[in-house]
Image 1 (cartoon, rainbow, N blue to C red):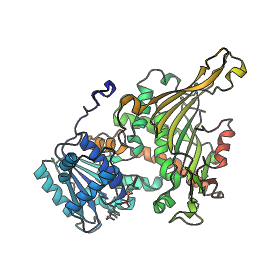
Image 2 (spheres, rainbow, N blue to C red; image 1 turned 180 degrees about the vertical axis):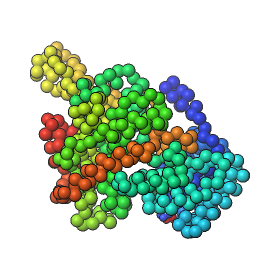
Image 3 (cartoon, helix red, strand yellow; image 1 turned 90 degrees about the vertical axis):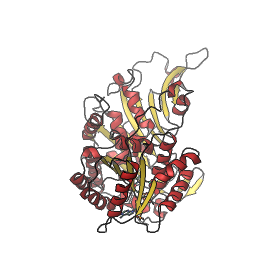
Image 4 (cartoon, rainbow, N blue to C red; image 1 turned 30 degrees about the vertical axis):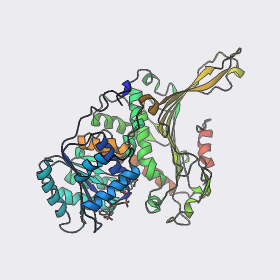
Length: 500
Ligand SMILES: NC(=O)c1ccc[n+]([C@@H]2O[C@H](COP(=O)([O-])OP(=O)(O)OC[C@H]3O[C@@H](n4cnc5c(N)ncnc54)[C@H](OP(=O)(O)O)[C@@H]3O)[C@@H](O)[C@H]2O)c1
């Protein structure tokens, strides 16, 4: 790392206080694929506190510390971004403990409290705790109440809540009320893992660390914005969840609206969590759709993705044969403020689309008077600044350039900044940053209650309008870019989705 001057000083972040990290849902998918590999990556980089304990909790009966350690070792070998290093694992493994208990039972939390008290004493953890709720949402209230009623440790406590945060505005408010009965808002860390992605944070660096973009980042210079969260995968084994969520709750309500808020927000006065949340929530309050015709939903039928024939959504295991769950949403949104009035934000997200990609594209207005002959600039498109969130993380700017030769012919070319190329280092996983920030008590990259509520308010209004008419599903083939009505949404405005 130190060979690259751009990477100098990267290892100088603050180390968190000693603490115990308690993972509820330790036998689950998220713990195996994301949380444990992230902890391992932090261990490799020596970013974990020197005195540290990880306590896995699940109801599964027959697992002890040793089998939990073995299980987590396998998870790290399968899913970590770093090659497995035995010496790092040998340091980390003794910090892992496992408890099998059900918090729904009276006294179900006793075992955990006893173990934490023992670890406090033995490892000098100072009573500091992070409780990570990696369990299905219906289990949140029971665990929160049991933890809240026994807040007896001397140190700080932080509670990490996985998505989805509620199913609609009402349930989100209810969940926040339950959390606030026992925890302060600054102790609650609502995960939207997109905010932990480097390229999403780079949107803030791009906008606010450079003098050249902000003066043109507004309705006078920007024609429109396009945000795409496209997945080529289907719902995999998650039908039970997805049938009730659909694309609007799975992606639009959280990740997509957060990307939009970061793109449209005013510069915060500093980078403290309240300053950033205050600016984001103003955007979310100002956000609206001009009407039901501005929101398109779709569901995939059979098709071909990356050369392979794939089943229709209604043919996936666990999905109803007449399911009306949407796997695609696109919308035209407006942010009603001085900076963005009348500037459309076109957003789209879906499963089984042609490619896996997340991008934010700022499409600038065309040059007002190109002095060239029309034929010279036929191949010229207006400037577009694209933030590639994933994959191929980076930023590219489309500009007009003269084609070498005698005549004056102009074409669009791309200036590309590739993250991996510039910094010559692998991209950290979002969960590494988010877990570290939780231990450091920094909630800037998490969502605050009022943001979540504004997001649900918009989603609830869209879902209510959907009750009035039912489209014919399926309406787009797997492997395409969505239903024809999504193209019409932009065609009506004389625009088109970016093709790649
Ligand atoms: N997997 C992902 O990639 C992903 C991504 C984003 C968000 N999330 C969120 O993360 C959470 C966990 O997801 P997951 O995919 O890991 O689920 P999962 O594979 O079904 O695992 C759920 C875990 O929770 C435990 N659990 C289930 N019901 C419980 C209850 N009533 N009380 C206490 N523990 C219970 C399970 O163990 P026992 O049954 O043994 O108790 C298991 O360890 C969910 O909120 C999900 O929406 C997951």
